[in-house]
Length: 327
Image 1 (cartoon, rainbow, N blue to C red):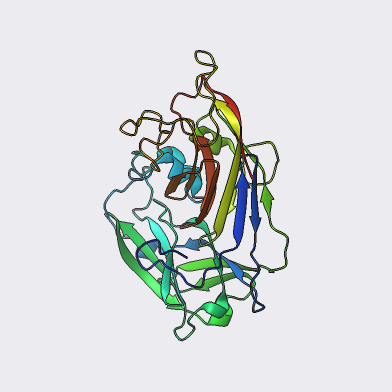
Image 2: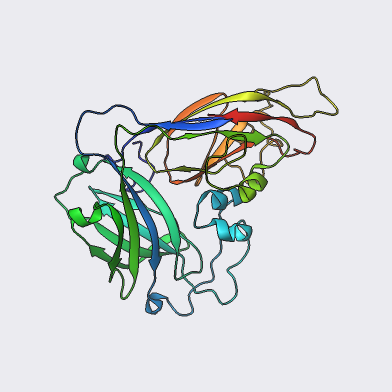
């Protein structure tokens, strides 16, 4: 996997292929020589010891996060309305907890969830245990993110066999009385690929579509597509969009969009940070804090876990017609 930041490269992450299309999102696992099966490891949640909260700590917020980032991370979706500038809710504890997993010589980070002692991240990564350096015991840690800095609350090591054992597990005593829960599932190499079909209406904003959407597989609808860190994703898109259906019905765009003057950003989705000046009406996407243009076809390795969101690159969508379909 391509390194994605501070101590976040993970050579033990598997790269099962995912295929998506504007009407569908299909995921498939490439053939790999016989060895132990890869596993899906999800850092589910934590319970923070209240004694670990610094009294009188600085008031923090989600001001640095776009609404799309919050809508893509499962643990931030419930507070997405607070993203982009709103202050911490009155009475909320002064802590923004995040979990760290040190394994195989690297560190995997979830994301901070503001003002809670019971964060639920549901952050998934795909791991090839046989490819990891097992000379150092793995460990979980809890940190409080303050002004972009990680303030460690505590850490606790565990055995390799316990970390990767299938099922739901809880590690207690991580920081005082704090505990972390994670889930492990075996991913059979011979299993049929998962498949999703996603339709992206051109007349709605990505954020509005994402707020109303649910995770699942309902062909012909807009869906939230779960993606694990380290997975290879391939999106194939089709369909036609009219970005000004009433005034200029003759203008029709495919998933690649209509060329836009690169010095202008008037067609960018609100909160979208993937391509200042990218083409008008192009298919775009958000995964965690990773934003990008999809177009007719795109293959990438997920640098973050989260819900994959799709949208049409246009600010004024009320006069649009048509849809893009992904598989």
